Amino acid sequence: MYPPQQHQDNTKDHLIEVIKTYPLATVISVQNNEPLITHLPLIYEDGKLIGHIDCHNPQVEHFKNTKIVNLIFSGPECYISPSIYSTTQLPTWNYIKVHLKGRIKINPDKKALKQSLIAMTDFLEAPEHRYILEADNPRLDKNLDYIVMFEIDITHWEGKFKLSQDKKPTDIEAARTELIRANQSSIVSFLNKIF
Image 1 (cartoon, helix red, strand yellow):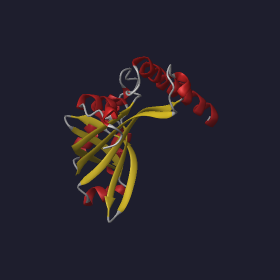
Image 2 (cartoon, one colour; image 1 turned 90 degrees about the vertical axis):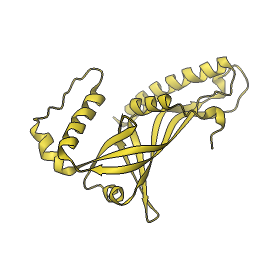
Image 3 (cartoon, one colour; image 1 turned 135 degrees about the vertical axis):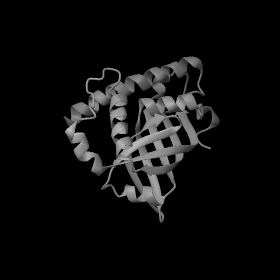
């Protein structure tokens, strides 16, 4: 298993926290040696992941014909310059990733789909809840035929938390501070470049 053991974190509560904080998953299915990849928000609920996909997405056919999918959830990440450490180090990259495998099943129940879309919106709107998806929303009803709901029973959990754990405590804290700083400034810089 890679990265090394000190960078593995298979504590389920930690992995669930990554999933809840960064719910956009990379969903990978393979059929006839052909991988298909889609990025979808998934909601963790009682050991399962629940998601929705456009009925025209070709991965829907994979979901009907495959039993297992692979998932990647990505937390914060950044380049770590040796300049931040109090000791001599080499450059590295710190990151948090969660890799999962699970059995996928399409749920054709339109009532369950509608309730799931409402629940997902409620979860994603937290904590302010500036928008509430109402059950009687006519746009919601019009679009139910174009959305496929699925559930994934998680069968394998793996956490990759490369956070300079092999360094001395002051350098670990410096890397943590850099991860926070770099993510905040890179978002601002990126958005300023494209908008």
